[in-house]
Picture 1 (cartoon, rainbow, N blue to C red):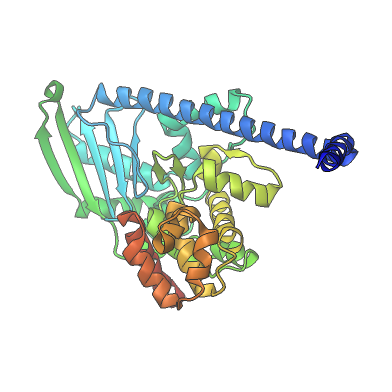
Picture 2 (picture 1 turned 180 degrees about the vertical axis):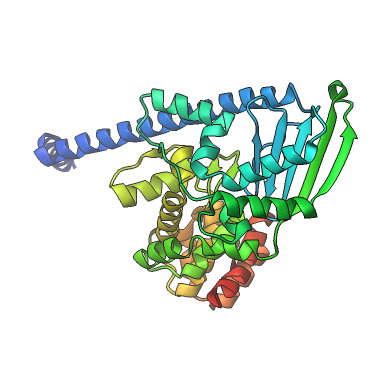
Amino acid sequence: MKIMKILILLFLVLLINNPLFADYNAINKDFLKFKQNTEKDFLLYKKIIDEEFNIYKRSILKVWSNAEISSPKIWVEYTEDYRVKRELNFEKEYIKISIVNPTGSEIKDKMLSHLEDMLSETSTTAVKRDQFLRGVEKRLRSSKMDILSSDKVDSAKVIGDAVTGYKNPNSKQIRKSALDLLKRGKVRRYSSKFKGSNIISIEIALPKESLKRKASLYVDTVRDFSNQRSLDPSLVFAVIHTESTFNPMAKSNIPAYGLMQVVPRTAGLDATKLIFGRQVLLAPSYLYNAQNNIRIGVAYLAILSKKYLRSIKNPKSRIYCAIAAYNTGSSNVGRAFINKASMRSAAPVINKMTPEEVYQRLIAKLPQKETRNYLKKVRRRMKYYKTK
């Protein structure tokens, strides 16, 4: 027994002094340091987001009784003095413009001017005009974080192409569309108890073909990146439709940005590792570029399917799990099968089931109702986009 203990001690001494062991320790320390720095960077990133949001919200509440802000399917923009609120609802397909204490009698002219401006706006100008995003971008760029941002976000119109039916419509086409929209608009005047404000607003339904037009703007980009990652383009279209209804300025407080609602901390870090060979945080300006956003979102879908869910043998079952994982994370998908956050343990159970059985189990057992509904919508919409 003593001889055995001596041999083990000798082995450990030799192992510790081995150069390969030293290299392993160095690599492990470097990895831990990198991980700690990445987490530290994200905490600073989130701190900047939260602080700038609070500043933005306080500014809105100085003029309005409620602080309406952009969401995944609604783009809200304020003029620099916050006295005009412009809202574009991508899901319910309407534009609403509201003005606090309007001056002058030519209200329709003012509404027309705002409509034309909205139809002319690009993602680049939208980011530059957004008081919240301006503050975030300025602070992110002045920090020492490893972060990707973009000065020119996108030259394509946020909504002008889809509403007018023209690709990069000119000023005459925009004015004609704005006049047509204005004729259909419902004007409402009301008084607010908040600071005795008088508010005039106009709500205008968008053309029935606008959803189809919005989707058509991204056909080439979706197909290119989907083919690059061996994914079905109908899956990507269905995810975009469900995440943002093709709102390129989509925003949520997770935070997540753009068409595919990319989360910088999770999807962003995984996708940048695959694409650039290193993990890097993505600024909102980078993700508001439609091409960047789709590239990152598609890469993350591929990672979910081919890395985290690679143990699932049936491709269709794997896609159903990847859709759910895009919304809730791959480990949470395992809970639907074994009541444990582990895909490694869940895979053998999944592999004994047909794809339809996998789908039905996910719909019945996924922990969050939001994810169950998300999976239903994406599967239904995949069928729609396969026919297009």
